[in-house]
Amino acid sequence: MNRKKTKLKPTTLVTPPREVSPPRQQLFKDHRRLGFSNTVLVLVILFLFMPLFVVITYSFNASKGMRWTGFSLQWYYKLLFESRQLWKAFLNSFIIAITSSLVATFLGALAAVGIKWYRFKARSYIQIISFLPMILPEVIIGISMLIFFSAVKIPLGMFSIFVAHTTFNLPFVLLLVSARLDEFDFSIIEAARDLGATERQGLTKVIIPSIVPALLSSMLMAITMSLEDFVITFFVAGPGSTTLPLYVYSMIRYGVSPVVNALSLILVLAIMVMALTFRRFLKTIAASS
Amino acid sequence: MNRARRSGLIYSAPMGLWLTLFFLVPLSIIVLYSFLKKGLYGGVEWQFTLNAYKEMFNPAFMRVLWRTLWVSVVATSITLLLALPCGYAMARSRHQIFWLALVIVPFWTNSLIRIYAWIAILSSEGFVNELLRSLGLIKESLSLIYNQGAVITVLVYVNIPFAILPLFTTIDKFDFQLLEAARDLGATKRKAIFSVLLPSIKSGVITALIFTFIPIFGAYTTPLLVGGKDSYMIGNIIVDQVTKTRNWPLASAFSLIITLLSTLGVVWMLVSSQQERVQNKRGVL
Image 1 (cartoon, rainbow over the protein chains, first blue to last red):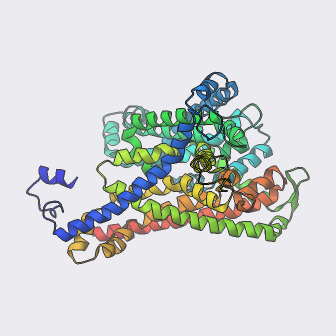
Image 2: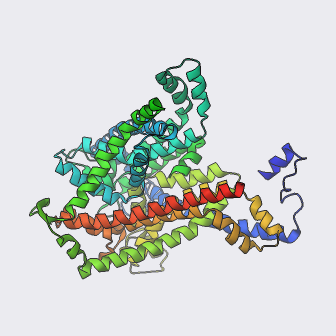
Image 3: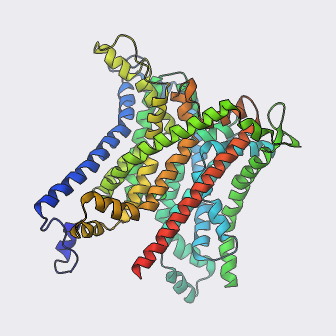
């Protein structure tokens, strides 16, 4: 990065970047310092991927256990054609992920606009209440919702899961969209208003188009979190509303399951494709989680 | 002005109402229930009592609470010590997006799958034991799982992205010329890092600390799946009180304690980032 800067503006008075004329000893030291943190980084990445890699490798194992007996695709066959329950659970997860992320993105983005640009009485109340769900352990959110649903007699099922997922997704949407609005120049809205745009036109023609990337990344994040959630769903799910994580839980409760190995590969691949597609937003997403 | 006030409220009200109804009200019910009498088959009876809080001081629960605290401190420390150099290396890298993707992909992978992967590796018929056996190094399986070590390893594994991401974000904003300036003024490498870099990324460190400590403190799935009989944590106790013992007031009381702890953490985080902002402003002036 430094090198680029000097190429562009060779005459500026910024401190000369180290690469230009470093005392030899300092260069050595810097190298070692970066060496240390880089080594830790590479080791941590290996640590993060190693378990997934092992499981994926054994999804091609001919036998059931973790002793390698030969290559086979039978577990993929089983996963794709003989796991009707699993795919039903996946469908449930998918429906909830889409609906809850849509609602959360809509409500969260609207609120972000309100909180960023206007001052009103309930503003700090909304800010605080949207912060806590992010930090509270999932067990607490799950149990409080379970107790709530049973107190107001809402039956546990797809609807209660949808409500729970929308609730834990809202704060992240708010955060992501607010971050985007921080960069947004409010005078553009004023200009639009001066030129005769109504409040609604200002929203639909100016604000929304300019925050589309933030909306997309919030939706993406909400969908992933919804598909991923086990603990909260565990409490608010009812009969017939098993989601994919709940189904996986029932499969792994008693040890190694080769079908889950095969599923891991598919999930990791899907997430890789997603991360690649949305690579432009990864930094914003990192900033909000 | 009046008009602006109204629009702000109109925009924010739907989310505010949603969170009030589905987050604040459930939390308030928990507060209420913790002061009520336990119902026979779950639920509560409408009778004020402090029984739930008295029951908390049961020595068995205190042991679990103590263990939870201890495990959380160890796992959080390991996580932060690993995450700091990672965030630093990522922020200084030319390939930030590449490293971010590498952290985010496992992070987004279903946490159950990730915990399961550890079961597949560590269990008695798992990857490590089968490997060692096939190499003829062991005859009996090593017991690598269902103990405290496995719980801590997996807790670190699951939570480390929560620490890396905020640390990366803060360090990325840090002006590294300040470090160079400190070095030019004669500071040693260590001194530059400890008295220039660390103080200015304090809010990021606190965020990382809270975002790892609180989920670990409330962990449920990890101790359940890779822990043994003596690795039960407070999260497991709470769930058991709801689903097995059906003592909702006690579960509520425990939940309330964790909620208060988390709220304190959030306040600390907000205050420290506020302070930093004020300091930065002063620096500019």
